[in-house]
Image (cartoon, rainbow, N blue to C red):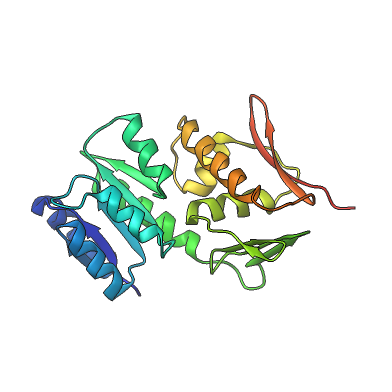
Length: 227
């Protein structure tokens, strides 16, 4: 089992999270700076990263940017600032989620468990092909007409959820629960931001066989346009 990497310069937070993580039999590594985080990421290939934004030297946002250039590992950003701008910036650069200090260690563990559950798929149900679109969930690989797209883990999971039920209308609350993996009712901006980026990446190549449609006042649905 690859370790969970916790990046924070607060020793008390590291100690508390260490107790909870190890109590659930997950291996854990700790980094206290951005530079140390990148070194441990390269060496250990963690399964999940808890990443504080405010770090000495290189901040968490820059660490996230660099990791996203080479990996789709789940990244949960930790911030002491309860502001929309920080959250949006973190999501825009590829973070999967954010946790605001002070937080409940139990909530953090629930989010880690949700992420790890989404890593697995049932045999025979891990690849989806619709027209020119191919999604291979275990490898987080998405291609359109043979062209592989650079999607984040959250974008792949969002696309998979929509495409697995063509024609079904998903409310934003549905998607927050199914894709984000925990109840976070009302954070519609996160859903809309991910849908916008997903559409932009899909639109880089022609895809007449499918589309992601907006159902105004409700949410989104995946539409198949096959002959």
